[in-house]
Image 1 (spheres, rainbow, N blue to C red):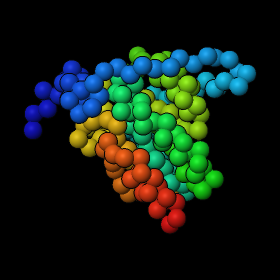
Image 2: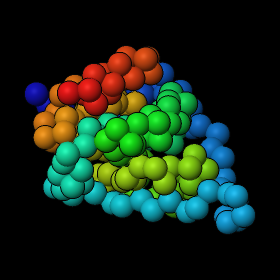
Image 3: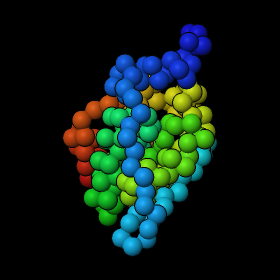
Length: 179
């Protein structure tokens, strides 16, 4: 199948058609340490580095949230994934976020994640940005974000989700944590 038509512009157009209509209004971090969020680190990754992060969490259930700052549903749902990480950390849940923004936006991504108190997660940004390579390398179903992957304690991919209700993800996470 010829995928040349899946240019970055086509991906953004597709995202608009399925719910990511305009750049989200991002909160800026304050940078203060007096009760304010601490700066969040974001690592640039390709598929090999991503797989290494998943392997590092072996023994835990891992929820991966693929998202982008330009996708309003992603920005809306990301806090829920982070809250799951806080709520179930003691039961063995690790949350990994993977931004599908351009790597030149790493500072904006880090700022947004800081405002969301995402220090509970391992935060990554795709080396391939908004290109089709991100969707292909990370095997993101339907080539759209938000997208989620859920790994069991052995590191096996058990379930994937596209844009879905948080309750469906909650139920799958709780089921794996109980195994």
